[in-house]
Amino acid sequence: MQYKHRLDLNDLIIPNPYSTFFARIPASTDIHNYTRREDSIIAIDKSIPPDRQHVLVAILDGSYTLLPFDRYRQLARQGRDISTWGVVTAVITQL
Image (cartoon, rainbow, N blue to C red):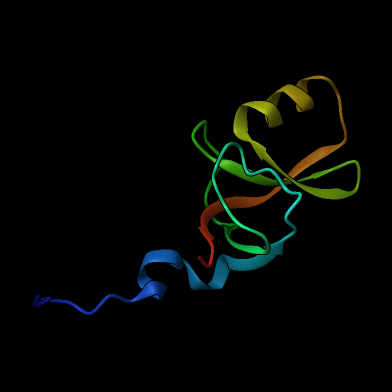
C-alpha cells in the first residue's frame, strides 16, 4: 500500500496551534455519547466560535465540565453561572 502524503496528527488535530490545548479527562467524564476509554485526552480549540454541533469545555459554577452546545444554552437561559472555555475538536484514546 502506498501513500502520497504522510499522515501528520498535528495537521489533523491542531489546525490553530496558538489556540489549541490538551486536557486529560477522567474515566467518569461523559463526552456526549462518544465512546472512549479511561484517561482519554481531548483537544480544545479556543478560537472556534461555539455552534450547535460542538461539545464545549465550559466553566459551570466555577468548575470545568464538558457539555453539548444545546445543554450549554439551556443552562445559560436558566441563569446559571456558565461560560465557554473552548470547543472540543478531538478525543484521543489508546486501545
